[in-house]
Length: 215
Image (cartoon, rainbow, N blue to C red; front, side, top):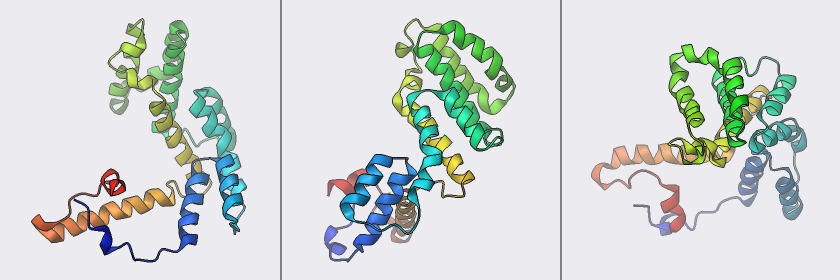
């Protein structure tokens, strides 16, 4: 259950603050054209060079989203040579994503050779074994889209990996790894959780953005 909108609908929110949150989200997610259009339409005056925050990341992010993983890795290494080596979880996700893209293109021989060359080392590490088994399952199917792990071929999976890469690049550039909008939602979720503990049975329940937007 969500609180009655009447309890907060008269609260004044600074429109400038709302615009800053939107702008931060657009820049964070490398949406350059949308950022330019948003600034133009709103007439915002930025106190920082937003393009400098975005240019170093957009090409890397775009390559990852397009499934050109090796190019994304190459450019990330050019930006910071040890960044991926010090973020092994992200490197593993990128390498397995490239394996998946080879399977998608039906290059099973290339996928197997790549796995032997780049992924074998992860087979001895407990934290990666299950994920490695999942991606290797794709080799057993003539139509991997019909395999039990078909979601690895989805755009959603690419998005997840690209977002992880984007976050570590942001951190390297000494920028927040999450957007202001994400942090705002996290705060709302925590506040609701605390209110539920105080309210007992009469609490409003966990925060649901879907339920909130339906009101």
